[in-house]
Length: 144
Image (cartoon, rainbow, N blue to C red; front, top):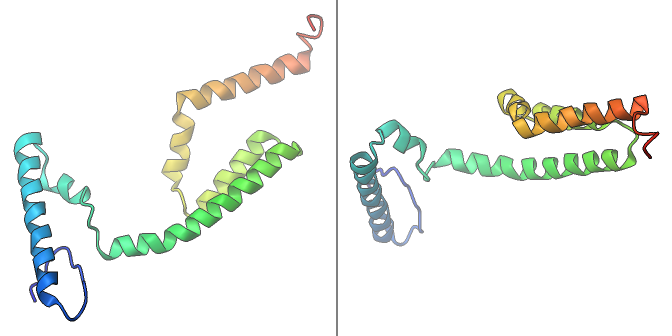
């Protein structure tokens, strides 16, 4: 049987169906590449990186995804419990959660730092500083 970029194994008793499906997928991908190259000026490297058929890498990613889901849920529950108990500052809890995600390699260092570049997050952080300053100085006590 010829090697195709999309090996789909239906069963051992029907090799003709397997060959038909694999050749159909190959033809469909060739048409999609031609359309992408002609209509959208997309190069082969971009097309290959966007391919939905990743083969064995996809299977490995699915094996890790269950661990990542369970681990993420566990860390989020701990984080919410720590935030609700109010024994630890919110900044320490969030940095701790980020550290747990980095240690488990669920996110990369680059992804972790990209979150701090968000304008909305910076605005909220500045408001936390302003609110803490107003609270400690008692600037609103006379008004309340």
